[in-house]
Length: 332
Image (tube, rainbow, N blue to C red):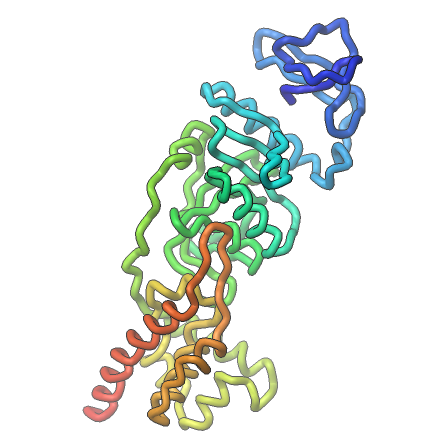
């Protein structure tokens, strides 16, 4: 760490500290020692390593990464402040960079509401908020990223990116989010970042919505239908539509599973909501309000989803697809 309290309780930087004095951690009040040499930037270190530092609920890996990141950004000539008190929103963000970027590190679980509340409060007073979370499950071959409902909240939707730190390998990654394809699976492109490369994304312009319009594979759709069958109830909504409309599994695999750009906002599986719309179209009764309440939506820390606009867009696009489906069936 770069800061510690001297015997008078005054906060002092490691650069200005004296090795002959005693210092304490400003958070846990435990003894720290000054390390000042020729190889590394001057800093303080705790005398005793603990798995749960400073009684702040943060793990040792959180604590160490925070100060490592601060030190590396400082070397790159960024002005870094560690855990300053932001009185306008009563918060202590992990790092403030150049008085305009707030970096929050989160390796433990917190509620979605808490993520959004903290982000919105910092953004409301002018900070650009960047979250870095812990290790994620990613398949390099298929480019499938697994995110639970909480983890996906940390996606910066305006820039379609997510940052992750792997404490076991000491590597920082950026995931470029291509699309959400249902369940907990995202298509994403992962790149390993140096600290300098990480700073390239501090001031990047917002990314437009990608023209990502493709179809789920047959195996993905079959896997979803198997999941529905494992619920072992005739009231399962997807199976209910399949049975009522007398659809075969092969028909569903061939004609449904379109993934529109708006899918990234929709938590519900593409097959689920497309079957619900198909059922309405079969009855010539598209009820936008009912459909809006039928599906669930993803949450993002820096973007408020307009569910009505999303629903209108996917209804329009699915209706166009449905006309092609009906034409194809008539030809057959």
